[in-house]
Image (cartoon, rainbow, N blue to C red; front, side):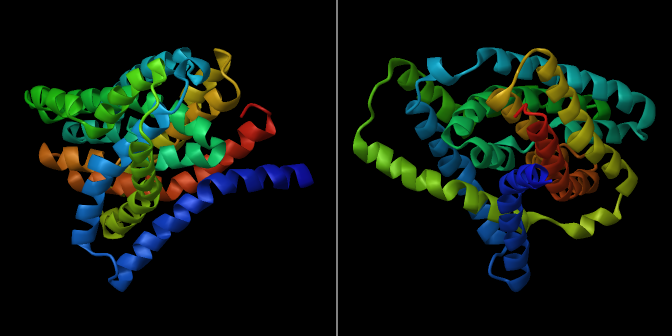
Length: 316
């Protein structure tokens, strides 16, 4: 019994701090301490400066050849594509009207890795989790964007967006931060102290500010629309997709931090960027918002359960 409680405590030590800050974001918005302007400016600061700096500093200080499992990153890319194709088949037969299929598919596979998933990994494994997750995020974020445009274009009968998405990928601050850090890490160049110290200040404010903005942007009124479809997508995002990716990783021999990072990133709630993309392309934005709200709430329980199970089996 004591061992189970210890494992349960470990799982909640990973998820609970994230959701406390998310809840504070909701509360501060209710009190008027956070408003739409704060959320917009804060989100831009996180996306364009703080989070890329966090990834750059952590990777540039790391001996990549000693800690990086290239097999895990390749598996994550292949697994993401396979899961996407499976979701496309399911949506084709079970989701109507057709215009909502892309929204469901995107909401089911696109994780909020850069904020909540990364926070999970840091809470679980510290700096080692940050490095492993950063490289994973760099590749899979590109795939998320490409696959999201494909599925939305198909369901909405649009033939635009690929070129803009490509430009968005090569100018994405997160990807730029990772790409700039890789040669420094490989060559083990020592950065000047002033760069490291300044970067650390930005890095330390990244997750608290990002989580506050995420909590403040949640719209619970959106749950009134398309609830059944949103529940379906949420079940895929929080249960089916993490199970398939983690079980496949287990069969391939991943254990410890590799299997843990794989599970934690895949079990993160749906990315807020999915709503922005659906709205920009003229899709069902209310459904996209529903999926985000439900997965943010459900991730606390689903991720905690998964961590408890993996930890109890000695796999994480």
